[in-house]
Image 1 (cartoon, helix red, strand yellow):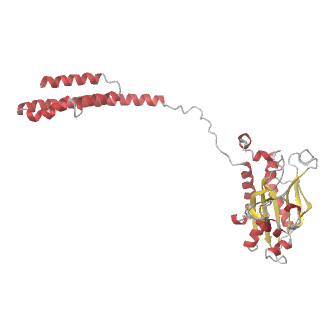
Image 2: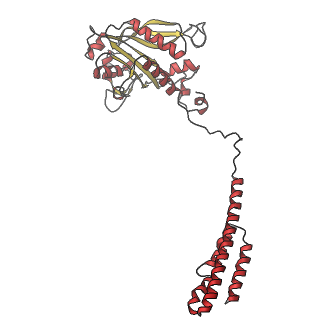
Image 3: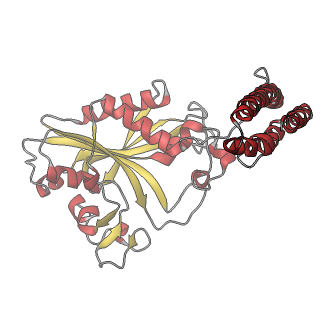
Length: 344
């Protein structure tokens, strides 16, 4: 039995010497130390031996087991460290190398413009209208009737307004001005709000027109509000938006829901008033429409025009963005061309 154990020991040491990787260690361990190994079978048969043989064989088999385990552990530590170093060397990162470019999304230029305009007016004390007061699917009552727009007004024609099949008077709003009415019906003066949002008109799509675009509506109702207040707010907005004070002019105009009404022009951004293709040689660019809220509109929402007055204004977001960034085609905002969008 002693010779058998010595042979097992010698065979195990020889197998250990031939180990080339951590996977080989497991194979040797299963061969010489598992429950089905020859060495373990000898230990099982100790009960059938004499006391003297039990002492000699048992001690020798335990010593061989211990020696094999120690040698395997040494091999394991050696090859584990070796394989770890090889892996680390293979996966080593040179932190001095430049990083690879990963494309990332940006805020759409129209959203940037809306956010900037809203921030400017909030700085002047205006609040955003409540969401429920600025619906995109609207009725003629709020989009036209309450804004003092008569039944025979051209804006009600199918060529300008998208009518739905939900009901004869349900439309996609053609202007954000209806938010004024909702807000005045749900609030009491003083009222000082702005309402950004999408609007829809049945237009032929071109470089300057689209059938979906964005507006920002403004409304201020309080006691003793005059046209001078309107001019002051508009001039301050234009100064903050374009980065410096610019010459402006207020031209007489007509809107059914304001009286008096005015179109506001700003000195051409492109030619500084000298005249160019963008401003058609006039040196001026139309920016927005405005005016004092018509007394009939105030009466319609239950506000006494003898006590309160106010002004309203509306501006096209796309137009302001095009002027600020020198964009000559409104369709670029909606084409989802990454080459265009990544510039902003």
